[in-house]
Amino acid sequence: MKEFENALSNYIKDFANGGAIRHFVELGYSVEEIKYSLDFPMSIEDVALYVWKEYIDSKVICLDKDEIDKDYIVKTSFVKDYNKYGKTSLRKVTKKEPIEKKNYISCDFGKRIYKDKEDFNNKLNMLDEDNKSMIENLPWPLEGVYVDVSSKLGQAVNAFYNIM
Image (cartoon, rainbow, N blue to C red; front, side):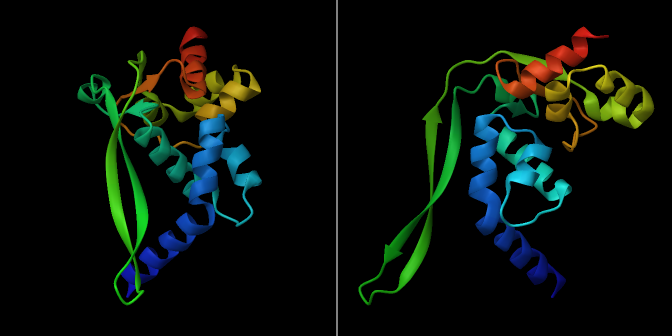
């Protein structure tokens, strides 16, 4: 029963805010800016997870070095189909979209936060507010990730490493 409740909750969140969150990420909004721009209330943690997923899907963040070399992303969409009796169903459609080659910077924020959160936050506070807001609230994993330098998040990560 718990799994069903979680699935239903995730479906409702995605239906209510998923498209808006993806749009705000494309515009370069931070997690906090997105949270306050939504019509349907969501916790900052849930928004951060959606933002993180969108960063990975759009290759702003790559989790391993092999992904950096790919020259395409896989986009998923749903198409509405009708059978001969008029019953509606959704069909998942995936397609590969070519992308331009990007430059990435290695980022180990998850490890830094785990080792010394206070030191990480002190360095984060040295950044200007825009760069700081892009980095904080994201669910940084303990393993290193690679961030696209040309993205707004990549510029914030680069600014963080430049103050060290």
